[in-house]
Image 1: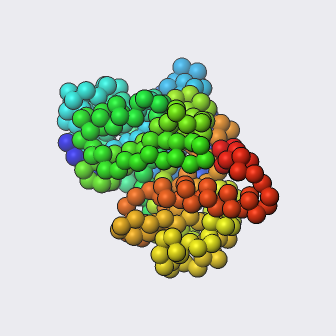
Image 2: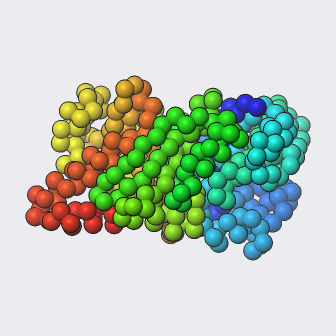
Image 3: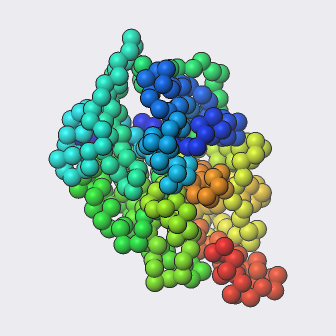
Length: 365
């Protein structure tokens, strides 16, 4: 079994058209297909959006019993399916189930004039499943006979591909989930760290497919510290799930400027963060003043630098959000920014006459 990458991500949402409006007009995705009962998708409406190598399928259940409706009722809008591109969907399904994956949907073939697609599903983490996708023929045909193609003008190429998915898991489950991905999916544990900041703490492990094309950043709260953002997500999401979707861009300054101009709201960064930035991470190609203006963060590791920024959540539960990331050699995920941000906030509040306790409270808010 070979996992070649992420074929697509399916989001279960309360209103597919409303979600598509945001991803289209604000983030630059374009409608590429649609399906519903008339195309053989019983009880649901689905819209396919794409930008460069990223495909998002937005699905709304049309009845309370549909899995999408059940998911949204429990978790709110979110990523419910992480589809994996494989060479042999039926063979991969059988192998994964034999290794211990929970069987969700057996192989099914969708056939059209120009393409044939085989899909099967197994359990992943929480209520998220992995769809195994084997494509034959025209790779642009998404799901023949179920998702009808839509002719639309080309959109942005600001975003290139899925870089990673950050997943929050309940306390005590991190090692078990990592072991599951190692044993069942053949992933490798490539990075481990314990992060402490502002009285909060979390454990993080990164698992990655042998191809290097599928990366999960798994986050578990440390219950010996005070509750923070991971506990908030687990409470609002009602369990494990994708906290944010990391999307790689080749030019983060241009991408952030364009998306902000369309109304995408990004997390702000204290101005003090940029004081001494080059001393922390090395010489920068981008002007520091421009990074400060756009609130873009910078981190470095042994292989180079990465530039990143997070959007505010677009959901009422304040759960799923996006990350834009530009890699300039770096292979890690910007954990150095957590401490730098907190220290910058402390300096900013101290200059304003705030107390250390107020600073700690502000970061956790």
